[in-house]
Amino acid sequence: MSQKDLRLSELEFVGTTEAREALSCVLHTILFCRAPGPFRPQTVHSEHFNLAYCRVGCSSVTRGVDTAVDSLLTGDSLVSAGPDLLRGDVVLSFFERRRSRSLFGLVSSEEKVTWEQWITPFLVSVRTEDDVEVRRNKLAADVQLRCTIADIYAMVNDSLDHVPSCMYEFDITTRNPTASHLSEPRDGGYTRVILNPPLYNLSSL
Image 1 (cartoon, rainbow, N blue to C red):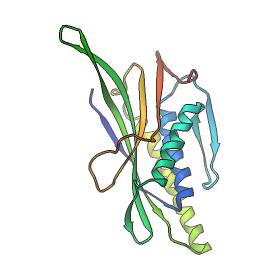
Image 2 (cartoon, rainbow, N blue to C red; image 1 turned 90 degrees about the vertical axis):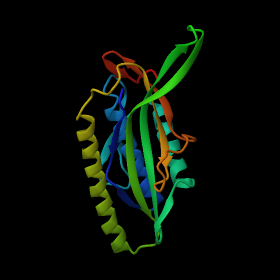
Image 3 (tube, rainbow, N blue to C red; image 1 turned 180 degrees about the vertical axis):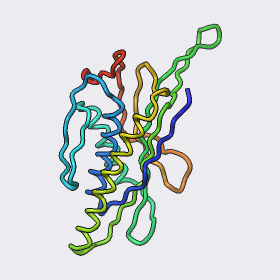
Image 4 (cartoon, helix red, strand yellow; image 1 turned 30 degrees about the vertical axis):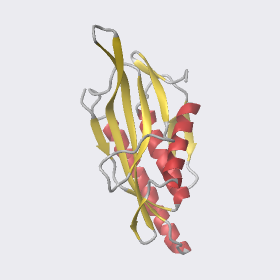
């Protein structure tokens, strides 16, 4: 199975509060689209943006996203991108676990196989702005976020050949934008998605 990497356009926010809600919106939208089966959907009305989005009505999924975003914005994952400007990447990976046997079937091992990865680069401005500038940047961020959600809808419907027909899981990691590797998924979101053929069933989580 080949891994499919999907990179979204860079988003720019004013302050960590705005960034936290926008990143949660992006992650929940992807998770919602990748679980098109009998689950409890929830509609979330944004406090900082003029939009609403859907998320899977599962407490473990919500906790995973909240924990990952909080860890990203309060930890050392952000790097300087200029005066009063920080840059970061959040990566949502879908994977399955495969067991293999060796030595005449006496020894088994487990392999983590990632089949899809979503990369969301973003910038956070932390400088003080006047009211006019805040309103202008807020409108720009609102348009950016709407376009990103539309891009997600287009990408998830592009091809499903790589999506496995078995149980799969996800985790959320951070990546230093200046490095080529992912961080360990410490404090990241992690949950299991159960496949109830032919639909994804998250209602039992």
